[in-house]
Length: 214
Image (cartoon, rainbow, N blue to C red; front, side):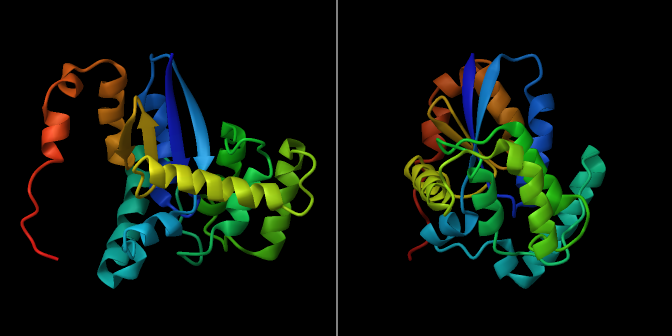
C-alpha cells in the first residue's frame, strides 16, 4: 500500500478541488492518505511569496479559474463572501479533532464545505459555532485551552517546510513533493511505478542554472 501525506489549508480553493478529485485520480490503487492541515501563509512567507491574492490581476484570475474548475470538474465551489481570510480558527478547530496532526477525511471535508459550498463568510461567528457543533463528536479530550491544536499546527507547518512544501495542496509520496491540483496525474504515475521517475529527468529538471541575478 502506498502512503500519501496531503498538506492542506482550508483557505485554498485548489486544496478543496484536489481533496474532491483525489479518490478519482487514484482510483484502483492501494493507498492511504494522511490529511495534515498547515498554515499556507507561513509557507508563502517562508519564500517571500505574496500568494495570488497579493497581486490584484492574479487574484481576479485565480478566483475565476477556481470557480470555472469547480464547474468543469463537477465540484460544488462558491467563493466565500470574503477572501482571503485568516484560516487559523478553521485549522485549529479541525486539529482539535487530532492527537498527532492528522485529521480524518470527514473532518477535512466538513471544514472545506463550510468554506466553499455556500458563498458565505467563512469566519462568521454563528457559522463557526455551528461548525464546532458538527465536529464535536470528533473532538479529542484534554485540550480545553486549544494548546495541543496550536502545537500540532506549528508542527505540521514546520514538517511541511522541512520536506520542501511551498504551497497547498501538496502531496508527499515516496519522498517526493507534488504540488497543486494539476499534479494529481503525476502523483498517480509515480505511485504506479512510471519508469520516468527512475530516470535522470526528475533531478535534471531541477538543476537548470538560474538565468537571473538576484
